[in-house]
Image (cartoon, rainbow, N blue to C red; front, side):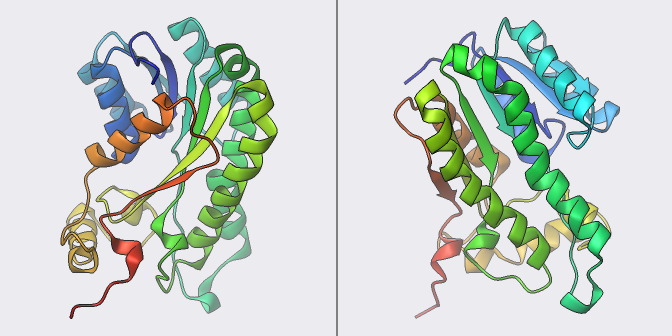
Length: 254
């Protein structure tokens, strides 16, 4: 497996949640990490916590000029680019009758289209380093959660995209994979309107603990472990790695 020491990584959504957990793990293991996000304060706090190996870029992955700035900053900070972790995303919840076309299009833009276009920006650099791309999938493609149809559809698209891009970019030495997390507490439920604040969000996710075979929800650190494997494993591509404590098994109590 490739060593993380000196590796250059770009992590979108790196100021909070799974992206922050990944940035902390990679930075502590000697990688040169560039994190991006729309909010300056959490990015600045994360970069200060991780230290000189971390560079922060404020930007929106749905804006073409911002995507290019993210890639350029990562290349400058790390002397190239070894991995793109496309982890930024949003959630829009609601029953079928309440869904709005504009919001669904925005959801696909942030969760799917932005990642594709970011990969396009990074392709040349990743080909030079024989690097990798990792997308964020979701257990929503394995378990049906009423009210989350739009979000689940974007994650289904990501899983399909993973295989197609792996086949397309493999000849350039670029690996493409996704991680499929189970229940992990992040702020996405608040942003998606499924919880009014962090306390309610945590309670909703914790309420899923019994549905996981292992009897608890996961942590961002545990998802970061899986992300590390996908970044380092040189013969793994086209894989959607499930890390969900058994939630997708759909097991019932005997």
